[in-house]
Image (cartoon, rainbow, N blue to C red):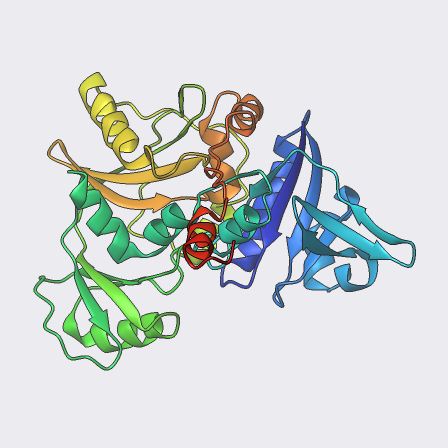
Length: 347
């Protein structure tokens, strides 16, 4: 199997996507790979594997050295004086974090051009990219979420929670623009920071001592689930810590939890995943307080694809690639128009 890893994008998480792609370069040792970079101008470039170093992109050396790509039916292509040449691969992997990758743009492009890919489809992207939509979706499925209130820039609205609270831009990941507010004196500044990234923010109570667990997985020919991870507990993982987290390739220890809790986490994960996220490897982050499970967030394209949570990540990629969820083909036969023409005597 030949895998095309698509990364970069016009996003605040552009650099994180580069880190993830470099990590997968080393993780996927047996898989044949090519790399497709999307720069801040949303142009596509074919990147040689030997050039997969962060400085190659930060220095903009790719503009001089990499081949620019265009899209056609079923393929990416390079152009030269001799014509166009198809870039050969079996399946693409959407590894663009944040805007472009997780908001549905790339999914729509790949589906439109009939390119096989691993990643969330358009509807799944839209729902998981927006924190409000995620909560509404989870509640509709019977999965609990932490209380919240939505604030819009320029809007005056009472916050019904006691301090501390947490402020989150509505459409952003990697803790960018997120603040823990411990008193009313800190509120205005935290909102100003969040509004730099999004005109809508979500406010939640910050619950001291709550347990957090992560679970990743996919549904291919059967369910493939990771171990349950209990992230190293700190008050708050800021952008810098999460940035480093995206380069993880070493396996982590499984959380020491009872079977009942593990079964309930798995049950909640499956409820969230199926059928909306078919074709993707996702990670769900859960909060647990007094045996009650709350969905914190859905990571439709987790950092480095959460490879460190799986025993055999390379085999997992192969399984998903050979069991992809595809759009239903629609046969356009013009029966309606032809019948109208016949009725008018114009057949």
